[in-house]
Image (cartoon, rainbow, N blue to C red; front, side, top):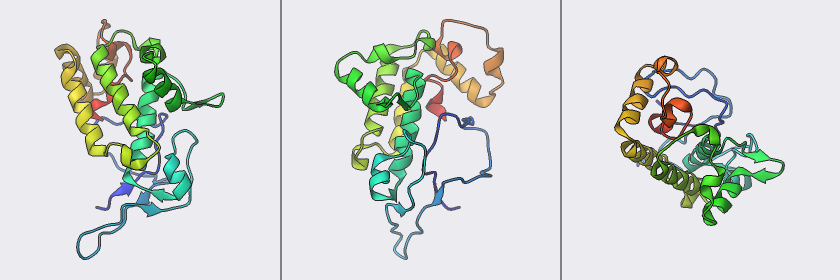
Length: 201
């Protein structure tokens, strides 16, 4: 099966649990990855017309018209920042990543966290923020690969309290459980779209 570069992703798309098998019915702006040559090497990018939603589109892709795997990493991590802050990628001319980065550099990062998240392990959020900032760099070479993103998310999951980890795994197995789980002080229960929940997606 050919690899697909999605070109960009958005927070309005539903996120399917990792253990559910689903089919792609609409490729939208997605592009097939380049076919490897006889020696197994493949170009690192796909040349394409620049299309996408402002705020989610990889800035380097916008300038060079070259779509890479790290273009998807950028878009995904914009979604991560939305989950953390509850803000849109671009609001009144302000760029979400730059606003978060300024808060991070000034030591005020927790001032931009969405208050609706409720309680959460601060060390998990800090690690998640660092991941998002790393992957939203303008230069593609400065970003993590998607594999590194997954490994970091799994590490964050292991940092979670045991009860929250169990709940997150249960939700992945049976998404209906999220609506039947009794309320608690857990950030996973209070807000089903927190960093701890997307670690398995």
